[in-house]
Amino acid sequence: IRRLISAVILLLIVSAVTFGIFFLLPKLAGQSSDQLAQQYIGKAPTPADIAAVKKNLGLDKPVYEQYWDFLKGIFVGVDYKFGPDVAHCHRPCFGYSFKTHIEVWPEIQSRLPVTLSLAAGAAVVWVVSGVATGVLSALRPGSLFDRAAMGVALAGVSLPMFFTGALALALFTYQWPIFERSDYVPLLEDPFAWARTLVLPWVTLAFLYSALYARLTRAGMLETLNEDYIRTARAKGLHERKVVVRHGLRAALTPIITVFGMDLGLLLGGALITEQVFSLQGVGAFAVQAITANDLPNILGVTLLAAFFIVLCNLVVDVLYAAVDPRVRLS
Image (cartoon, rainbow, N blue to C red; front, top):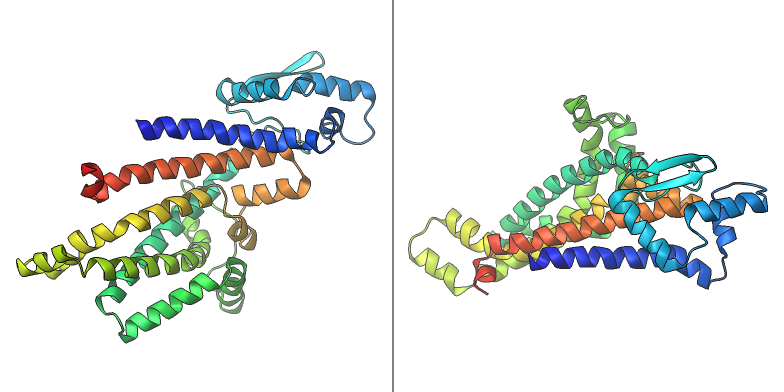
């Protein structure tokens, strides 16, 4: 309960800081409300148009009132008056795009399945492959497998995503057409086509992350397998598999869960480079387009969504600590 309350408070702080960055700092830097309102209108606006937009969007109010209206829009929605017409922005309302004049949240929502599919599939691949490789390396330290696995892991950590992604496309799509390049297919529409379009991004993204998890798992297992309780478990005659999995791996999972929560939260907020390399129209690609166009409402929406996922994943990690390590419950 304490973690849940602190997560809500943290999200409020993040929303306030993010709102201040996008709306308070420009004013401190010399940008006026008229200049901000002009981005909603287009070229050659009249003073009457600028004044009307300022009033409709609340840009003529103090910053704290604007922030309160922004919070109310997220939780209950908000009405925008455009002359005689009233447009209702449904909750969660992050405003309207400067460029397309479309609600921000429906745009993000339409791209969210792509990012969720990419992050979830890649997470499964990198956790299974990384942890398994780390355990096998720790059981045979100094062996040929250990040296080869850690060498590949070092390469995976060192090579940037834009290089490995482009290399994977060049080899497995153009040189050897094993994975054809096609648009994203929703999971419920065709599960096989959904997986086929995402296998190469999954593997490429997992190559980067599984390398880190293999090294973390190996280091944790080597430390844990030298503990007194591991020797006691072996002396009691327990099967080696039970000693390694139940007693060794379980104790070594705490740092892995910590890193996994951060990595998954960041990816759920948008895998910018991966989506750009593989032409996936997810939240990351949406963020890049918003930044390029200097579209503040879209940038603000993506930033708050990413913060929400990071806080949520860290909350889940705190709960998993107690499930994995009994020492956390006892403390």
